[in-house]
Length: 168
Length: 168
DNA sequence: TCGCAATTGTTGTCGTCAACAACAATCTTT
DNA sequence: AAAGATTGTTGTTGACGACAACAATTGCGA
Image (cartoon, rainbow over all chains, first blue to last red; front, side, top):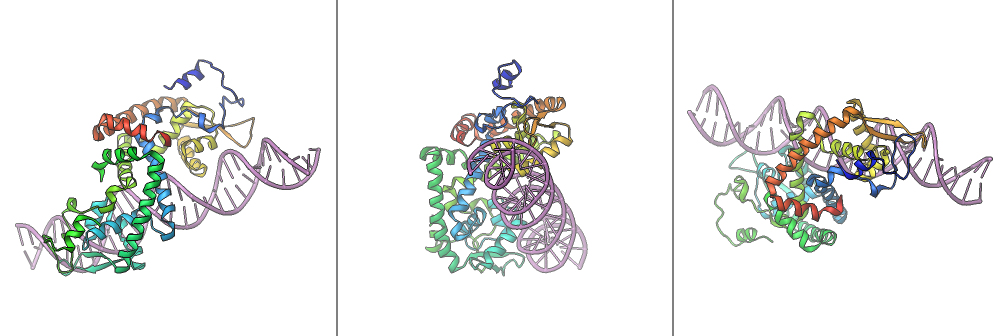
């Protein structure tokens, strides 16, 4: 039970009511989050939304979204991976990866090469164009990362990366 | 450019190839994440997915999702808020909140009371049933939070909350 | 006081994403 | 050769963020 909720119950005067027991509908930043302040998930969710928006905005000139970036980065560093391997490593569903790669392949950034060893699978590679494009994506992503640093602080960002390293 | 990528280029023997330059398609945990390890957004995203899954699972017996929980918590602590106020405070779109409240109202957990002062808006309240239900939700959510603590450590969780406090 | 802009809730659409289920082609195991 | 597993694919469902439009209502300025 939060203090402010208790205050209401014990009759501490709310500053404005509308006849329905309504307590100041506006005035956004004085609303009690109560139990939410103790939940990591809530803060993480808000942060993640902020990060994604900044990422998308910072990379808008190249029209690359976070998941696309992560796929290209992994493929670039590990040429020849199968879709299953990429999906498992990044925690993406393989069904989801199909459309993702369709999109990247249609933009000539990635190519699927039918594997001769296992004809079920595709070996994934960046195209030459994809390689140079990825270099630019990485520069823009680094710029985005500086925005994160500016938002939460250099050492906080590094500490965050250490804390969450077990999820990568 | 990652070390393992360089190794490939410099001819360090990859252990298995399939004739297409493919390097060990399987063996998930040896895949180089390259630039992703330096991106807070990637770790945060993976973490957030893990948290949501655990939250949903831990509260599955009461069938409450994170967003529903956050809305009920705020309404419980600030009875009489309008939909706009809740949406702004939680960073939810007011259009999204409509369905969310429809669902909660149909389960008799929340009620919308037409405001007499401003007939455009609704004053949001928990029902009696909603109040007792929320108490149980909070107990389960606290259990979920202990899972988080067990996953990343007590002091890491607290540090995380401090780092991300500016997003709540 | 009248009229126009802003606000509130609502409806609808679009795109992203996670979670499943089913399927054909192919591999592996027995 | 038969049975079972794997890989890529297609499709569906539901939660969610973003956006646009709308009616009812409010508030403000001319």
